[in-house]
Amino acid sequence: MTADCDIAVIGAGISGLTAAFNLGRRGFSVHVFEASSRAGGVIGTEREAGVLYERGPNSILDTSPRINELLDDLGIRGERIDASAISAKRFIVRNGRLVALPMSPPAFLGSPLFSPRAKLRLLGEPFVRRAPPHEEETVAQFVLRRLGREFLDYAIEPFVAGIYAGDPRQLSLCAAFPRLHALEQRYGSLILGQIRGARERGRRAETSKRVAGSFSFHNGMQTLTDALARAVPELHRDTRAMAIRRDADGSFVVSLQGRDGLARCRARAVVLATPADCAATLLRSAASDAAAALDAIPYAPVVTLASTYRRADVTHPLDGFGFLAPKAERRRILGTLFSSSMFAGRAPEDTVLLTTYLGGQRDPDMVARSDEELGGVVHAEMSALIGARAAMQFCAVTRWARAIPQYTLGHAERIRRAESAERQLPGLFLCASYRGGVAVGDCIQSGYRMAEAVTRYLQSAAPP
Image 1 (cartoon, rainbow, N blue to C red):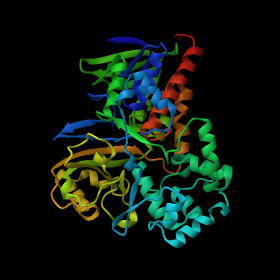
Image 2 (cartoon, one colour):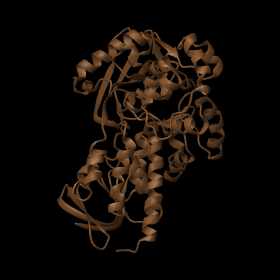
Image 3 (cartoon, rainbow, N blue to C red):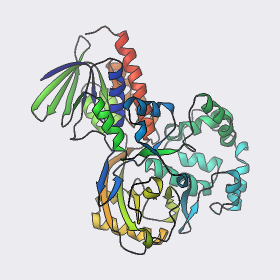
Image 4 (tube, one colour):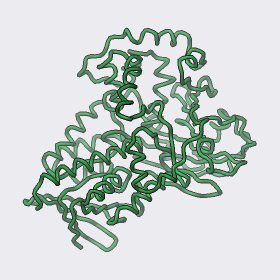
């Protein structure tokens, strides 16, 4: 089979599907090739035992107008369901119990989450000298310098584990949290920067991730990726890209292994929307240094465990989004979402649905444990932290051996080297969560930006 098209997109996760959908709306012919039997990447919704649960991301932060623009274009805005009002409340484990994270200055002053000494330390933050602009710090170094140990242990470390399943002692501040780095460099203070930066976000119609609301869909997160998959006419599942070659005329030839044997696709441009190691394999012969840089990007392994209990068997009111467990507390989990509190219809009225995350860089060997062991770990933690007094009614385990890319020290340089492939091979574009952010909303915006970049290239390049 030879399929000639304008763009070949390799990988049908949220980034690749968003890019392909937007390119198709611009009038280009697009073929998407996905190695697995389903589209959507790590996004996956299941219905089982009377509950609806997620194997990957549970919600989307509503940070940009482009996200709702995508829902409108797909015709699924009416399927959107916002997180409940109580999910604005979030908990942190401190001294073995759940303590609400303060969300306002008065709540912060009265919160038992931080000691009086830590609160006084915060008053001095505007007077801490900014770091040299080109000095790369870890997240932990930055927080210790500006806010102190207690904020690192009970605010930033669990927050980093919740987003990246990562270790703040390894993550690069300017790569993983570029806006924090920019706030310090521009304003000399996080506090002053938050106040003044809010005005700038308002002018851009953007919302800070710190205060943005979360949403999902009545039938779960897969509603989004299923709609994208339906909207991409040429989506080839069970079709693995084996090699990429750029011919003298500027066109690309993608060699494929599909259900019916070997195939190839000739395209004017190629979007690589795969994890870093897969992209490295495809680029090894044509752009060896870029491939080596991509291979060097580590990924955190994560276990997702969905579980249910009878409502009567849990003593905690579960009146919030969920909780994060700091490393300093020596718990065996990263945190738990109160999924049935966040979204209506996830479980029967007399049942609570929880989604617990384990492993990450904190305990990478957790993915090798059996379902029985993982269930036992989670139940022990639920008994201690939310008062689960009886056995789980249901438990489903999902293992992600390479779940989330880690923006560790040197990440910006690795990305710069990876981008050399785009310069060596004009018409090749890299679009994945190792570049531009790991959240679902970040990936959607990356897909939009990629569609714009590919459009500019194709409009300026003569057809091969």
